Length: 171
Image 1 (tube, rainbow, N blue to C red):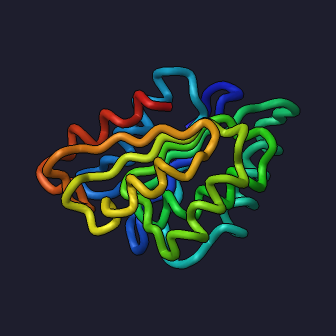
Image 2: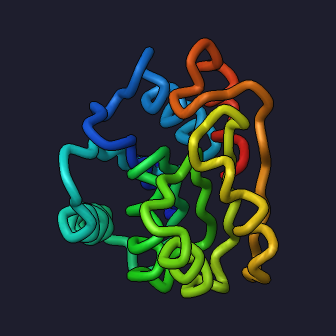
């Protein structure tokens, strides 16, 4: 979706389609487009950070942007991969991660530290298996970090699609 020089990159969870369950990522895209964002939605078939970098660079080139800002929204593995993308682009401004996979908690915390200038918001459902790491992350003295917990939300935000979509406002 073409919009302004603020580019939102949305990365779904592992094995997810571009639209996501109930087309939640497409709904988020429409909200962001209405706010003036250009939006890129990426599926997540396998580890795809290098592919995603190329997609972003091709989009920027196609649009003729010489200056732009990058905003990242991701869920699960998609949120985890967005940490590497945010680090790869100095144009990165903000990162919103929903139930990010904390594949290795120490590595995850280090990845957060490596992007000090990026505003980071991590959302965890209290029923998600990685919620147990939220306090450890919060106590890790990471710059520009905010953690939000959502009561009774599981990893997929089952039955809470509207709540999940509302997180678009955090970008």
